[in-house]
Amino acid sequence: MICWPGKSYGVVVENKEHGGSLVKKIVLTGGGSTGHVSLNLALIPLLKEHGWDIFYIGSSTGIERNLIEKIPYVTYHAISTGKLRRYFDIKNFLDPLKVGLGVIQSQKLIRDIKPDIVFSKGGFVSVPVILAAWINRVPIISHESDMNLGLASKIALPFSKKMCFTFPETGKHIPDDKELFLGPVIRAQIKNGSRKKGLELCGFDDKKPVILVMGGSLGAQKINDTVRNCLSDLLRNYQIIHLCGKGKADSSIQMKGYKQFEYVDDELADLYAATDLIISRAGSNSIFEFLALKIPMILIPLPLSSSRGDQILNAQSFEKQGFCEVLDEEDLTVQLLTEKINGMYSRKYDYKKNMSDNNPGDGLMKLYDMIEKVSVSKKG
Image 1 (tube, rainbow, N blue to C red):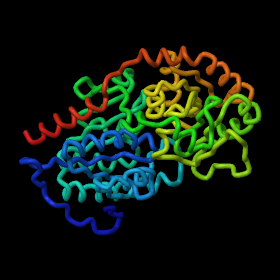
Image 2 (cartoon, rainbow, N blue to C red):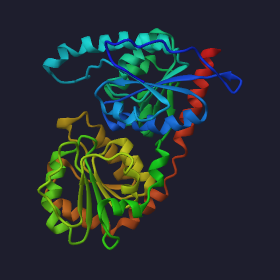
Image 3 (cartoon, one colour):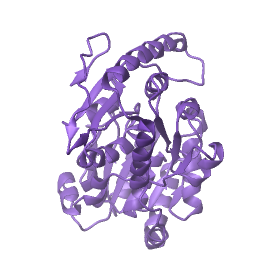
Image 4 (cartoon, rainbow, N blue to C red):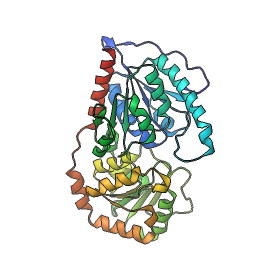
């Protein structure tokens, strides 16, 4: 069921019996980008396995809707949302009204659902949900993937029982009684890809190594342009999968060994399995997936002109640990990118060894255990 803003939300039934005990209910939230949904996608099967009723509150048009609504055992509700900006924009005057409407809608949903706990992965859509949960005295656990707290996480922190995080360095921004270091949380299905299927999906053979280029769910135009300008040189030695972003495929390029996708979902695990080297932005969820799969990476973080600098810090942390090479977007040229690719591929086993030595533990089970603990403490 998907409930749209401005329409009746209906009444959610009271807690049902399940295996001799009351079914626990959880509301998940987070959206705006794939990174603000991926941890929820990893968590949902575990919640289902343990008998939770799962509800998701997100936006009506964000990528979270596309990713979540296809899961048959998750009930999706859409609310009004407004973007949180640190810069001047005329929309800044309208968006607080959208957030306010979102809080009202979330309050009604929270009262109807009566969840035991709310888990927030962040993004601007999560703010109304967090405020509504706090008003209704529902405990909240939040999560920050990047090294520094984003604006949504800073807003969530005072209202949250726990703030989970991926990078150890993030803990210095969080009170001791609220911090919970998880390390990376990786979707199980990402680890189960087939190299054979990935190559077949692209029409590739196994004679040349494969480079995967991805600029995030929205793509990255400068990376796209630079890679396309390198093709004549790169395709002599490599095959290239290019995840170029919605509306950013170039149908005029038809070259053997080059395959474009605007966006992939279920196919991503197979494409990862076929990949020998990745060129990517430095969003934390993605780079920890590369780390888990031990794929050497060239990271091109979002520049400060387009971000709060979180991807730059993520990339620097990985570079210090010997997991990647970093290339600043301002320095990105055909020649430099080609040199980086050839140099990294020649040393790929050094990077793989460094990644193999990394053992962060099971972040997903740490998170689930805390959800159980906090939800039980609510009843107490």
